Length: 187
Image (cartoon, rainbow, N blue to C red; front, side):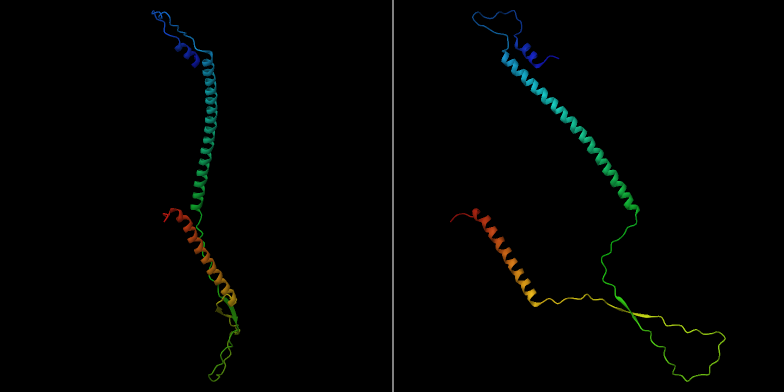
């Protein structure tokens, strides 16, 4: 394939014609060597840039393929995790419940004494075993203990709150004034 410089030189030569140049005019069909060197240098730099772009394109294509494979793996992993999560029973996280009341044992009450007159006892055929009464429990709510805050601590906290609010208001209005002041017309 002929180079750009060769094509340029071919096109620079005048077409062969039977007409002869007019006397007294000189026409030089050749290209100056400096122009030829300049075109050759530009051609070489263009070829180098083209080769560099080809290499960058190849690297980007490889990176693109790696990223696509990574994305495909992430999608597959996500689908597997989704299927696994769907297959697992749902565990509902309950909010932290209020403290359960504490059970306090109570002494069993003594059996009531009969108020009816005693009867004549008849011996039973089966031996009777006394059963112990089951322990009884009552519920007492556990209340968190609060430590009383001294009056002075609340007064200081209130003063700090007022001071911070005052500083915020002053800062906001001062900043707004400094921003808007250049925009106001001079009087």
